[in-house]
Length: 611
Image (cartoon, rainbow, N blue to C red):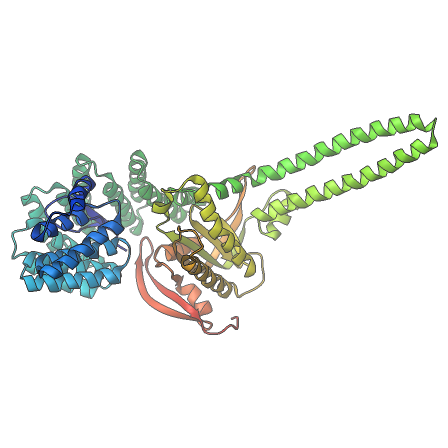
Protein backbone atom coordinates (compact mmCIF):
# COMPACT_ATOMS: atom_id res chain seq x y z
CA UNK A 1 0.00 0.00 0.00
CA UNK A 2 1.39 3.39 -0.94
CA UNK A 3 1.33 6.50 1.17
CA UNK A 4 2.42 9.89 -0.08
CA UNK A 5 3.04 13.56 0.64
CA UNK A 6 2.03 16.40 -1.67
CA UNK A 7 4.36 18.03 -4.16
CA UNK A 8 7.75 16.97 -5.27
CA UNK A 9 8.27 15.40 -1.85
CA UNK A 10 8.86 11.68 -1.98
CA UNK A 11 6.73 8.92 -0.64
CA UNK A 12 7.97 5.40 0.11
CA UNK A 13 6.56 2.06 -0.93
CA UNK A 14 8.26 -1.27 -0.23
CA UNK A 15 11.55 0.51 0.14
CA UNK A 16 11.04 2.44 -3.09
CA UNK A 17 10.32 6.09 -3.63
CA UNK A 18 7.65 7.57 -5.88
CA UNK A 19 6.89 11.24 -6.49
CA UNK A 20 3.77 13.34 -6.83
CA UNK A 21 4.27 16.53 -8.87
CA UNK A 22 1.74 19.37 -8.81
CA UNK A 23 3.75 22.32 -9.97
CA UNK A 24 7.05 24.07 -9.98
CA UNK A 25 6.67 25.53 -6.50
CA UNK A 26 6.90 23.95 -3.06
CA UNK A 27 4.08 23.60 -0.56
CA UNK A 28 4.21 26.06 2.30
CA UNK A 29 1.48 26.60 4.91
CA UNK A 30 2.77 30.11 5.47
CA UNK A 31 1.97 30.96 1.83
CA UNK A 32 -1.57 29.68 2.32
CA UNK A 33 -2.01 31.77 5.47
CA UNK A 34 -0.90 34.95 3.70
CA UNK A 35 -3.09 34.26 0.66
CA UNK A 36 -6.16 33.82 2.86
CA UNK A 37 -6.15 37.58 3.51
CA UNK A 38 -6.38 38.26 -0.24
CA UNK A 39 -9.11 35.62 -0.58
CA UNK A 40 -11.21 37.20 2.20
CA UNK A 41 -10.97 40.62 0.53
CA UNK A 42 -12.72 39.01 -2.49
CA UNK A 43 -11.46 41.56 -5.00
CA UNK A 44 -9.82 39.27 -7.61
CA UNK A 45 -11.57 38.11 -10.76
CA UNK A 46 -10.90 35.86 -13.73
CA UNK A 47 -7.46 34.28 -14.06
CA UNK A 48 -6.19 35.98 -10.90
CA UNK A 49 -8.97 34.38 -8.83
CA UNK A 50 -8.31 30.98 -10.42
CA UNK A 51 -4.58 31.23 -9.67
CA UNK A 52 -5.32 32.29 -6.07
CA UNK A 53 -7.64 29.31 -5.48
CA UNK A 54 -5.07 26.91 -6.94
CA UNK A 55 -2.31 28.19 -4.65
CA UNK A 56 -4.60 28.21 -1.61
CA UNK A 57 -5.63 24.59 -2.12
CA UNK A 58 -2.08 23.52 -2.93
CA UNK A 59 -0.42 25.16 0.09
CA UNK A 60 -3.09 24.39 2.70
CA UNK A 61 -1.33 21.59 4.58
CA UNK A 62 -2.89 21.52 8.05
CA UNK A 63 -6.60 21.56 7.08
CA UNK A 64 -7.41 19.05 4.32
CA UNK A 65 -11.19 19.75 4.30
CA UNK A 66 -10.40 23.45 3.74
CA UNK A 67 -7.97 22.52 0.96
CA UNK A 68 -10.73 20.41 -0.61
CA UNK A 69 -13.13 23.39 -0.44
CA UNK A 70 -10.64 25.59 -2.29
CA UNK A 71 -10.19 22.90 -4.97
CA UNK A 72 -13.97 22.54 -5.37
CA UNK A 73 -14.37 26.30 -5.69
CA UNK A 74 -11.58 26.32 -8.30
CA UNK A 75 -13.44 23.63 -10.26
CA UNK A 76 -16.75 25.50 -10.11
CA UNK A 77 -15.21 28.83 -11.18
CA UNK A 78 -13.20 27.15 -13.98
CA UNK A 79 -16.41 25.64 -15.36
CA UNK A 80 -18.06 29.07 -15.33
CA UNK A 81 -15.02 30.65 -17.01
CA UNK A 82 -14.71 27.62 -19.38
CA UNK A 83 -11.01 27.56 -18.50
CA UNK A 84 -10.11 23.91 -19.03
CA UNK A 85 -6.47 24.34 -18.00
CA UNK A 86 -7.41 25.41 -14.45
CA UNK A 87 -10.28 22.92 -14.43
CA UNK A 88 -7.69 20.19 -14.96
CA UNK A 89 -5.55 21.57 -12.12
CA UNK A 90 -8.57 21.75 -9.82
CA UNK A 91 -9.43 18.09 -10.33
CA UNK A 92 -5.78 17.09 -9.79
CA UNK A 93 -5.79 18.93 -6.44
CA UNK A 94 -9.13 17.39 -5.46
CA UNK A 95 -7.90 13.91 -6.41
CA UNK A 96 -4.74 14.29 -4.35
CA UNK A 97 -6.70 15.26 -1.23
CA UNK A 98 -9.07 12.30 -1.65
CA UNK A 99 -6.05 10.07 -2.13
CA UNK A 100 -4.57 11.23 1.19
CA UNK A 101 -7.92 10.59 2.85
CA UNK A 102 -7.90 7.03 1.47
CA UNK A 103 -10.78 7.56 -0.98
CA UNK A 104 -8.98 5.93 -3.91
CA UNK A 105 -12.11 5.37 -6.03
CA UNK A 106 -13.10 9.05 -5.76
CA UNK A 107 -9.50 10.14 -6.41
CA UNK A 108 -9.39 8.01 -9.58
CA UNK A 109 -12.61 9.62 -10.82
CA UNK A 110 -11.14 13.10 -10.15
CA UNK A 111 -7.96 12.26 -12.08
CA UNK A 112 -9.93 11.08 -15.12
CA UNK A 113 -11.93 14.34 -15.04
CA UNK A 114 -8.62 16.23 -14.89
CA UNK A 115 -7.40 14.28 -17.93
CA UNK A 116 -10.58 15.11 -19.86
CA UNK A 117 -10.21 18.83 -19.12
CA UNK A 118 -6.48 18.85 -19.97
CA UNK A 119 -7.21 17.15 -23.30
CA UNK A 120 -9.76 19.83 -24.15
CA UNK A 121 -7.20 22.51 -23.28
CA UNK A 122 -4.49 20.64 -25.29
CA UNK A 123 -2.27 21.11 -22.26
CA UNK A 124 0.33 18.33 -22.46
CA UNK A 125 1.77 18.95 -19.00
CA UNK A 126 -1.57 18.52 -17.20
CA UNK A 127 -2.40 15.50 -19.37
CA UNK A 128 0.89 13.90 -18.40
CA UNK A 129 0.39 14.62 -14.67
CA UNK A 130 -3.18 13.26 -14.85
CA UNK A 131 -2.00 10.04 -16.52
CA UNK A 132 0.74 9.68 -13.89
CA UNK A 133 -1.73 10.23 -11.04
CA UNK A 134 -4.11 7.63 -12.50
CA UNK A 135 -1.23 5.17 -12.76
CA UNK A 136 -0.23 5.86 -9.14
CA UNK A 137 -3.74 5.03 -7.89
CA UNK A 138 -3.90 1.82 -9.93
CA UNK A 139 -0.51 0.90 -8.46
CA UNK A 140 -1.83 1.46 -4.93
CA UNK A 141 -4.85 -0.70 -5.78
CA UNK A 142 -2.53 -3.50 -6.93
CA UNK A 143 -3.67 -3.25 -10.57
CA UNK A 144 -0.23 -3.48 -12.20
CA UNK A 145 -1.53 -3.87 -15.76
CA UNK A 146 -3.42 -0.57 -15.70
CA UNK A 147 -0.59 1.13 -13.82
CA UNK A 148 1.92 0.17 -16.54
CA UNK A 149 -0.40 1.40 -19.31
CA UNK A 150 -0.95 4.83 -17.78
CA UNK A 151 2.69 5.33 -16.77
CA UNK A 152 3.65 4.82 -20.42
CA UNK A 153 1.03 7.38 -21.52
CA UNK A 154 2.33 9.86 -18.92
CA UNK A 155 5.94 9.45 -20.03
CA UNK A 156 5.02 9.84 -23.71
CA UNK A 157 3.21 13.14 -23.07
CA UNK A 158 5.72 14.59 -20.61
CA UNK A 159 8.50 14.03 -23.16
CA UNK A 160 6.72 16.70 -25.23
CA UNK A 161 7.13 19.26 -22.43
CA UNK A 162 10.22 20.98 -21.09
CA UNK A 163 9.47 19.94 -17.50
CA UNK A 164 12.43 17.67 -16.76
CA UNK A 165 11.50 16.95 -13.15
CA UNK A 166 7.94 15.88 -14.04
CA UNK A 167 9.29 13.49 -16.68
CA UNK A 168 11.84 12.12 -14.23
CA UNK A 169 9.04 11.66 -11.68
CA UNK A 170 6.93 9.62 -14.12
CA UNK A 171 9.98 7.48 -14.97
CA UNK A 172 10.88 6.74 -11.34
CA UNK A 173 7.24 5.86 -10.54
CA UNK A 174 7.08 3.56 -13.57
CA UNK A 175 10.34 1.98 -12.42
CA UNK A 176 8.86 1.40 -8.99
CA UNK A 177 5.88 -0.43 -10.51
CA UNK A 178 8.20 -2.53 -12.70
CA UNK A 179 10.13 -3.46 -9.55
CA UNK A 180 6.92 -4.46 -7.75
CA UNK A 181 6.08 -6.98 -10.49
CA UNK A 182 9.72 -8.19 -10.56
CA UNK A 183 10.62 -6.76 -14.01
CA UNK A 184 14.04 -5.77 -12.72
CA UNK A 185 15.73 -5.00 -16.06
CA UNK A 186 12.88 -2.69 -17.07
CA UNK A 187 12.99 -1.01 -13.64
CA UNK A 188 16.71 -0.31 -14.09
CA UNK A 189 16.05 1.26 -17.50
CA UNK A 190 13.52 3.66 -16.00
CA UNK A 191 15.76 4.46 -13.02
CA UNK A 192 18.84 5.09 -15.17
CA UNK A 193 16.97 7.63 -17.33
CA UNK A 194 15.26 9.32 -14.37
CA UNK A 195 18.61 9.50 -12.58
CA UNK A 196 20.18 11.37 -15.52
CA UNK A 197 17.27 13.83 -15.60
CA UNK A 198 17.41 14.49 -11.85
CA UNK A 199 21.17 15.05 -12.12
CA UNK A 200 20.69 17.38 -15.09
CA UNK A 201 18.16 19.43 -13.07
CA UNK A 202 20.46 19.37 -10.03
CA UNK A 203 17.54 17.95 -8.05
CA UNK A 204 19.38 16.30 -5.17
CA UNK A 205 16.50 14.60 -3.39
CA UNK A 206 15.36 13.00 -6.64
CA UNK A 207 18.90 11.76 -7.26
CA UNK A 208 19.04 10.33 -3.74
CA UNK A 209 15.82 8.35 -4.08
CA UNK A 210 16.81 7.22 -7.56
CA UNK A 211 20.12 5.85 -6.23
CA UNK A 212 18.30 4.10 -3.41
CA UNK A 213 15.81 2.50 -5.77
CA UNK A 214 18.56 1.24 -8.06
CA UNK A 215 20.27 -0.23 -5.02
CA UNK A 216 17.12 -2.18 -4.20
CA UNK A 217 17.01 -3.63 -7.73
CA UNK A 218 20.67 -4.66 -7.57
CA UNK A 219 20.01 -6.30 -4.19
CA UNK A 220 17.15 -8.35 -5.66
CA UNK A 221 19.40 -9.39 -8.55
CA UNK A 222 22.06 -10.56 -6.12
CA UNK A 223 24.56 -7.85 -7.05
CA UNK A 224 25.38 -6.94 -3.44
CA UNK A 225 28.32 -4.67 -4.20
CA UNK A 226 26.36 -2.39 -6.54
CA UNK A 227 23.39 -2.54 -4.17
CA UNK A 228 25.40 -1.30 -1.19
CA UNK A 229 27.26 1.27 -3.31
CA UNK A 230 24.02 2.88 -4.53
CA UNK A 231 22.28 2.67 -1.15
CA UNK A 232 25.26 4.29 0.57
CA UNK A 233 25.33 7.11 -2.02
CA UNK A 234 21.62 7.69 -1.44
CA UNK A 235 22.09 7.74 2.32
CA UNK A 236 24.98 10.22 2.03
CA UNK A 237 22.83 12.68 0.03
CA UNK A 238 19.83 12.23 2.32
CA UNK A 239 21.99 12.89 5.38
CA UNK A 240 23.14 16.17 3.81
CA UNK A 241 19.50 17.06 3.18
CA UNK A 242 18.59 15.93 6.73
CA UNK A 243 15.91 13.61 5.35
CA UNK A 244 16.35 10.69 7.75
CA UNK A 245 13.07 8.81 7.38
CA UNK A 246 13.85 7.24 3.96
CA UNK A 247 17.35 6.31 5.21
CA UNK A 248 15.78 4.15 7.91
CA UNK A 249 13.40 2.65 5.31
CA UNK A 250 16.26 1.79 2.94
CA UNK A 251 18.24 0.12 5.73
CA UNK A 252 15.22 -1.96 6.77
CA UNK A 253 14.64 -3.04 3.20
CA UNK A 254 18.28 -4.07 2.79
CA UNK A 255 17.85 -6.14 5.93
CA UNK A 256 14.81 -7.81 4.39
CA UNK A 257 16.78 -8.71 1.27
CA UNK A 258 19.51 -10.40 3.28
CA UNK A 259 16.96 -12.12 5.49
CA UNK A 260 15.43 -13.76 2.43
CA UNK A 261 18.91 -14.93 1.44
CA UNK A 262 19.44 -16.48 4.88
CA UNK A 263 22.28 -14.09 5.76
CA UNK A 264 21.23 -13.44 9.36
CA UNK A 265 24.28 -11.39 10.56
CA UNK A 266 24.11 -8.93 7.63
CA UNK A 267 20.33 -8.59 7.93
CA UNK A 268 20.67 -7.97 11.67
CA UNK A 269 23.35 -5.33 11.09
CA UNK A 270 21.20 -3.32 8.66
CA UNK A 271 18.15 -3.44 10.95
CA UNK A 272 20.14 -2.34 13.99
CA UNK A 273 21.50 0.63 11.98
CA UNK A 274 17.94 1.53 10.97
CA UNK A 275 16.72 1.32 14.57
CA UNK A 276 19.60 3.44 15.90
CA UNK A 277 18.92 6.15 13.30
CA UNK A 278 15.16 6.10 13.94
CA UNK A 279 15.66 6.42 17.69
CA UNK A 280 18.17 9.24 17.27
CA UNK A 281 15.71 11.36 15.28
CA UNK A 282 12.49 10.20 16.96
CA UNK A 283 11.03 8.49 13.87
CA UNK A 284 8.30 6.45 15.58
CA UNK A 285 7.05 4.67 12.44
CA UNK A 286 10.56 3.52 11.58
CA UNK A 287 11.24 2.52 15.19
CA UNK A 288 8.15 0.33 15.03
CA UNK A 289 9.08 -1.25 11.67
CA UNK A 290 12.70 -1.85 12.70
CA UNK A 291 11.58 -3.59 15.90
CA UNK A 292 9.16 -5.75 13.92
CA UNK A 293 11.98 -6.73 11.56
CA UNK A 294 14.24 -7.58 14.53
CA UNK A 295 11.44 -9.61 16.11
CA UNK A 296 11.07 -11.72 12.97
CA UNK A 297 14.84 -12.12 12.57
CA UNK A 298 15.26 -13.37 16.13
CA UNK A 299 12.24 -15.63 15.75
CA UNK A 300 13.86 -17.26 12.71
CA UNK A 301 17.07 -17.62 14.67
CA UNK A 302 15.21 -19.37 17.50
CA UNK A 303 15.79 -16.61 20.07
CA UNK A 304 12.18 -16.23 21.21
CA UNK A 305 13.07 -14.04 24.20
CA UNK A 306 14.70 -11.37 22.02
CA UNK A 307 11.93 -11.78 19.44
CA UNK A 308 9.24 -11.08 22.02
CA UNK A 309 11.14 -8.09 23.40
CA UNK A 310 11.33 -6.40 19.98
CA UNK A 311 7.74 -7.32 19.14
CA UNK A 312 6.62 -5.50 22.30
CA UNK A 313 8.65 -2.47 21.19
CA UNK A 314 7.01 -2.67 17.76
CA UNK A 315 3.53 -2.56 19.30
CA UNK A 316 4.57 0.19 21.73
CA UNK A 317 5.69 2.55 18.96
CA UNK A 318 2.98 1.68 16.45
CA UNK A 319 0.98 4.66 17.63
CA UNK A 320 2.27 7.71 19.50
CA UNK A 321 -0.87 7.94 21.61
CA UNK A 322 -1.35 5.55 24.51
CA UNK A 323 -4.55 4.54 26.18
CA UNK A 324 -3.20 5.78 29.52
CA UNK A 325 -6.00 4.47 31.67
CA UNK A 326 -5.99 0.96 30.21
CA UNK A 327 -2.22 0.58 30.30
CA UNK A 328 -2.04 1.85 33.87
CA UNK A 329 -4.84 -0.45 34.94
CA UNK A 330 -3.09 -3.49 33.45
CA UNK A 331 0.18 -2.50 35.08
CA UNK A 332 -1.40 -2.04 38.51
CA UNK A 333 -3.63 -5.13 38.60
CA UNK A 334 -1.02 -7.26 40.33
CA UNK A 335 -0.19 -4.51 42.82
CA UNK A 336 -3.85 -4.06 43.69
CA UNK A 337 -4.19 -7.80 44.25
CA UNK A 338 -1.26 -7.83 46.65
CA UNK A 339 -2.45 -4.69 48.45
CA UNK A 340 -5.90 -6.23 48.97
CA UNK A 341 -4.31 -9.28 50.63
CA UNK A 342 -2.11 -7.12 52.86
CA UNK A 343 -5.09 -4.97 53.84
CA UNK A 344 -7.04 -8.08 54.84
CA UNK A 345 -4.20 -9.17 57.12
CA UNK A 346 -4.03 -5.71 58.74
CA UNK A 347 -7.81 -5.64 59.26
CA UNK A 348 -7.72 -9.08 60.88
CA UNK A 349 -4.84 -8.12 63.17
CA UNK A 350 -6.66 -4.98 64.30
CA UNK A 351 -9.86 -6.89 64.88
CA UNK A 352 -7.98 -9.63 66.78
CA UNK A 353 -6.35 -7.05 69.03
CA UNK A 354 -9.69 -5.40 69.68
CA UNK A 355 -11.24 -8.78 70.40
CA UNK A 356 -8.59 -9.63 72.98
CA UNK A 357 -9.10 -6.28 74.68
CA UNK A 358 -12.84 -6.83 74.79
CA UNK A 359 -12.43 -10.33 76.18
CA UNK A 360 -10.16 -9.05 78.98
CA UNK A 361 -12.64 -6.36 79.91
CA UNK A 362 -15.50 -8.85 79.72
CA UNK A 363 -13.76 -11.33 82.02
CA UNK A 364 -13.13 -8.64 84.64
CA UNK A 365 -16.66 -7.39 84.51
CA UNK A 366 -18.01 -10.95 84.59
CA UNK A 367 -16.85 -11.22 88.21
CA UNK A 368 -19.31 -8.43 89.02
CA UNK A 369 -22.14 -8.77 86.55
CA UNK A 370 -23.21 -11.89 84.63
CA UNK A 371 -25.30 -9.71 82.41
CA UNK A 372 -22.37 -7.65 81.22
CA UNK A 373 -20.52 -10.91 80.35
CA UNK A 374 -23.50 -12.01 78.25
CA UNK A 375 -23.33 -8.75 76.31
CA UNK A 376 -19.59 -9.26 75.78
CA UNK A 377 -20.18 -12.76 74.40
CA UNK A 378 -22.77 -11.41 72.02
CA UNK A 379 -20.36 -8.76 70.75
CA UNK A 380 -17.66 -11.40 70.29
CA UNK A 381 -19.89 -13.62 68.18
CA UNK A 382 -20.99 -10.65 66.12
CA UNK A 383 -17.34 -9.70 65.51
CA UNK A 384 -16.43 -13.20 64.34
CA UNK A 385 -19.29 -13.14 61.85
CA UNK A 386 -18.20 -9.76 60.44
CA UNK A 387 -14.56 -10.88 60.28
CA UNK A 388 -15.49 -13.93 58.23
CA UNK A 389 -17.53 -11.69 55.96
CA UNK A 390 -14.53 -9.36 55.44
CA UNK A 391 -12.28 -12.33 54.59
CA UNK A 392 -14.78 -13.65 52.04
CA UNK A 393 -15.27 -10.23 50.45
CA UNK A 394 -11.51 -9.67 50.13
CA UNK A 395 -11.00 -13.15 48.68
CA UNK A 396 -13.76 -12.51 46.11
CA UNK A 397 -12.21 -9.13 45.27
CA UNK A 398 -8.80 -10.73 44.69
CA UNK A 399 -10.35 -13.39 42.49
CA UNK A 400 -12.16 -10.77 40.40
CA UNK A 401 -8.94 -8.82 39.94
CA UNK A 402 -7.17 -11.95 38.69
CA UNK A 403 -9.99 -12.75 36.25
CA UNK A 404 -9.74 -9.23 34.85
CA UNK A 405 -6.17 -10.03 33.81
CA UNK A 406 -6.14 -13.79 33.10
CA UNK A 407 -8.41 -16.48 31.66
CA UNK A 408 -10.19 -18.46 34.38
CA UNK A 409 -8.11 -21.63 33.95
CA UNK A 410 -4.86 -19.67 34.00
CA UNK A 411 -5.95 -17.67 37.06
CA UNK A 412 -6.70 -20.89 38.96
CA UNK A 413 -3.28 -22.27 38.06
CA UNK A 414 -1.58 -19.09 39.29
CA UNK A 415 -3.51 -19.14 42.60
CA UNK A 416 -2.79 -22.84 43.22
CA UNK A 417 0.88 -23.03 42.20
CA UNK A 418 2.16 -19.43 42.12
CA UNK A 419 3.33 -19.79 38.48
CA UNK A 420 1.80 -20.48 35.07
CA UNK A 421 3.35 -22.80 32.48
CA UNK A 422 3.33 -21.66 28.87
CA UNK A 423 0.93 -23.65 26.66
CA UNK A 424 0.83 -24.24 22.95
CA UNK A 425 -2.50 -24.21 21.11
CA UNK A 426 -2.52 -25.75 17.65
CA UNK A 427 -5.54 -23.80 16.41
CA UNK A 428 -6.33 -20.34 17.73
CA UNK A 429 -8.11 -17.46 16.00
CA UNK A 430 -6.55 -14.02 16.59
CA UNK A 431 -8.22 -10.66 15.87
CA UNK A 432 -6.69 -7.17 15.67
CA UNK A 433 -8.58 -3.88 15.29
CA UNK A 434 -7.28 -0.39 14.60
CA UNK A 435 -9.00 2.98 14.22
CA UNK A 436 -8.31 4.96 11.04
CA UNK A 437 -7.12 8.51 11.69
CA UNK A 438 -6.91 8.02 15.47
CA UNK A 439 -3.49 9.65 15.86
CA UNK A 440 -4.44 12.92 14.14
CA UNK A 441 -7.68 13.18 16.12
CA UNK A 442 -6.08 12.32 19.46
CA UNK A 443 -3.50 15.11 19.17
CA UNK A 444 -6.36 17.60 19.57
CA UNK A 445 -7.75 16.00 22.75
CA UNK A 446 -6.93 16.31 26.40
CA UNK A 447 -5.76 13.07 28.12
CA UNK A 448 -9.12 12.83 29.93
CA UNK A 449 -11.16 13.15 26.73
CA UNK A 450 -8.85 10.70 24.93
CA UNK A 451 -9.26 8.02 27.61
CA UNK A 452 -13.03 8.56 27.71
CA UNK A 453 -13.32 8.16 23.93
CA UNK A 454 -11.20 4.99 23.76
CA UNK A 455 -12.96 3.57 26.82
CA UNK A 456 -16.36 4.08 25.14
CA UNK A 457 -15.39 1.81 22.23
CA UNK A 458 -13.35 -0.77 24.13
CA UNK A 459 -16.04 -1.29 26.80
CA UNK A 460 -18.43 -2.34 24.05
CA UNK A 461 -15.74 -4.54 22.47
CA UNK A 462 -15.22 -6.25 25.87
CA UNK A 463 -18.95 -6.98 26.11
CA UNK A 464 -18.94 -8.48 22.61
CA UNK A 465 -15.96 -10.70 23.49
CA UNK A 466 -17.78 -11.96 26.60
CA UNK A 467 -20.95 -12.59 24.57
CA UNK A 468 -19.11 -14.92 22.15
CA UNK A 469 -16.84 -16.61 24.69
CA UNK A 470 -13.64 -15.02 23.35
CA UNK A 471 -10.57 -13.87 25.27
CA UNK A 472 -9.46 -10.24 25.26
CA UNK A 473 -5.65 -10.23 25.27
CA UNK A 474 -4.69 -6.55 25.49
CA UNK A 475 -5.12 -3.03 24.16
CA UNK A 476 -2.32 -0.65 23.24
CA UNK A 477 -3.25 2.83 22.11
CA UNK A 478 -6.18 2.41 19.71
CA UNK A 479 -5.29 -1.22 18.91
CA UNK A 480 -7.48 -4.03 20.35
CA UNK A 481 -6.37 -7.68 20.34
CA UNK A 482 -8.36 -10.79 21.26
CA UNK A 483 -8.24 -14.54 20.65
CA UNK A 484 -10.55 -17.54 20.45
CA UNK A 485 -9.77 -21.19 21.14
CA UNK A 486 -7.80 -20.65 24.37
CA UNK A 487 -8.72 -22.81 27.36
CA UNK A 488 -11.95 -24.17 25.86
CA UNK A 489 -12.90 -27.31 23.97
CA UNK A 490 -15.11 -25.63 21.39
CA UNK A 491 -13.96 -25.95 17.76
CA UNK A 492 -16.01 -23.06 16.33
CA UNK A 493 -13.75 -20.25 17.57
CA UNK A 494 -13.14 -18.93 14.02
CA UNK A 495 -16.90 -18.67 13.43
CA UNK A 496 -17.47 -16.95 16.80
CA UNK A 497 -14.64 -14.52 16.07
CA UNK A 498 -16.22 -13.56 12.73
CA UNK A 499 -19.58 -13.02 14.50
CA UNK A 500 -17.84 -10.76 17.01
CA UNK A 501 -16.03 -8.85 14.24
CA UNK A 502 -19.30 -8.26 12.37
CA UNK A 503 -20.88 -6.94 15.57
CA UNK A 504 -17.91 -4.61 16.21
CA UNK A 505 -18.18 -3.17 12.67
CA UNK A 506 -21.94 -2.69 13.14
CA UNK A 507 -21.44 -0.93 16.48
CA UNK A 508 -18.78 1.45 15.07
CA UNK A 509 -21.04 2.27 12.11
CA UNK A 510 -24.05 2.88 14.40
CA UNK A 511 -21.93 5.22 16.52
CA UNK A 512 -20.94 7.23 13.43
CA UNK A 513 -24.62 7.64 12.50
CA UNK A 514 -25.78 8.52 16.02
CA UNK A 515 -26.22 12.31 16.21
CA UNK A 516 -26.19 12.16 20.03
CA UNK A 517 -22.80 10.46 20.12
CA UNK A 518 -19.48 12.26 20.38
CA UNK A 519 -18.31 14.11 17.30
CA UNK A 520 -15.10 12.12 17.55
CA UNK A 521 -16.05 8.94 15.65
CA UNK A 522 -13.81 6.71 13.58
CA UNK A 523 -13.67 4.06 10.90
CA UNK A 524 -12.26 0.71 12.00
CA UNK A 525 -10.05 -1.87 10.28
CA UNK A 526 -10.17 -5.51 11.39
CA UNK A 527 -7.84 -8.40 10.62
CA UNK A 528 -8.28 -12.09 11.55
CA UNK A 529 -6.00 -15.13 11.22
CA UNK A 530 -6.12 -18.70 12.56
CA UNK A 531 -3.09 -20.78 13.48
CA UNK A 532 -0.90 -22.13 16.30
CA UNK A 533 0.13 -19.84 19.18
CA UNK A 534 1.95 -20.06 22.49
CA UNK A 535 0.19 -18.48 25.50
CA UNK A 536 1.59 -17.63 28.89
CA UNK A 537 2.10 -15.10 31.66
CA UNK A 538 5.05 -12.68 31.59
CA UNK A 539 6.39 -10.70 34.53
CA UNK A 540 6.66 -11.46 38.22
CA UNK A 541 5.35 -8.44 40.15
CA UNK A 542 3.40 -6.75 37.38
CA UNK A 543 2.33 -9.58 35.12
CA UNK A 544 0.29 -9.85 31.93
CA UNK A 545 -1.24 -12.66 29.88
CA UNK A 546 -0.11 -12.70 26.25
CA UNK A 547 0.17 -14.89 23.15
CA UNK A 548 2.95 -15.24 20.59
CA UNK A 549 3.59 -16.94 17.30
CA UNK A 550 3.43 -16.52 13.57
CA UNK A 551 -0.36 -16.62 13.70
CA UNK A 552 -0.30 -13.41 15.76
CA UNK A 553 2.05 -11.67 13.32
CA UNK A 554 -0.10 -12.66 10.32
CA UNK A 555 -3.27 -11.45 12.11
CA UNK A 556 -1.57 -8.08 12.64
CA UNK A 557 -0.68 -7.99 8.92
CA UNK A 558 -4.31 -8.82 8.04
CA UNK A 559 -5.41 -5.75 10.03
CA UNK A 560 -2.84 -3.42 8.44
CA UNK A 561 -3.85 -4.65 4.94
CA UNK A 562 -7.58 -4.25 5.65
CA UNK A 563 -9.74 -1.26 4.69
CA UNK A 564 -11.97 1.02 6.78
CA UNK A 565 -15.19 -0.72 7.78
CA UNK A 566 -13.97 -4.10 6.44
CA UNK A 567 -12.99 -7.44 7.98
CA UNK A 568 -9.90 -8.90 6.29
CA UNK A 569 -9.28 -12.62 6.96
CA UNK A 570 -6.50 -14.99 6.01
CA UNK A 571 -6.75 -18.16 3.97
CA UNK A 572 -6.54 -20.24 7.18
CA UNK A 573 -9.59 -18.54 8.73
CA UNK A 574 -11.51 -18.62 5.44
CA UNK A 575 -11.15 -22.41 5.26
CA UNK A 576 -12.92 -22.70 8.63
CA UNK A 577 -15.83 -20.29 8.05
CA UNK A 578 -16.44 -20.40 4.29
CA UNK A 579 -19.57 -22.58 4.65
CA UNK A 580 -21.24 -20.10 6.98
CA UNK A 581 -19.91 -16.72 5.85
CA UNK A 582 -20.21 -14.86 2.56
CA UNK A 583 -16.66 -13.78 1.64
CA UNK A 584 -15.07 -11.75 -1.17
CA UNK A 585 -11.73 -13.05 -2.48
CA UNK A 586 -9.16 -10.25 -2.74
CA UNK A 587 -6.49 -12.27 -4.47
CA UNK A 588 -2.88 -12.79 -3.43
CA UNK A 589 -1.59 -9.55 -1.96
CA UNK A 590 2.05 -8.73 -1.33
CA UNK A 591 2.70 -8.41 2.42
CA UNK A 592 5.98 -7.05 3.74
CA UNK A 593 8.22 -9.80 5.11
CA UNK A 594 5.58 -12.45 4.18
CA UNK A 595 5.43 -12.55 0.42
CA UNK A 596 2.02 -12.98 -1.20
CA UNK A 597 -0.87 -14.05 1.03
CA UNK A 598 -4.42 -14.89 0.01
CA UNK A 599 -6.94 -12.56 1.67
CA UNK A 600 -10.72 -12.35 1.88
CA UNK A 601 -13.20 -9.68 2.96
CA UNK A 602 -16.10 -10.99 5.10
CA UNK A 603 -19.34 -9.56 3.67
CA UNK A 604 -21.82 -11.24 6.04
CA UNK A 605 -23.32 -14.56 7.10
CA UNK A 606 -25.01 -17.10 4.86
CA UNK A 607 -27.05 -18.51 7.77
CA UNK A 608 -27.22 -18.34 11.56
CA UNK A 609 -26.32 -22.00 12.00
CA UNK A 610 -22.80 -22.37 13.57
CA UNK A 611 -20.13 -24.39 11.78
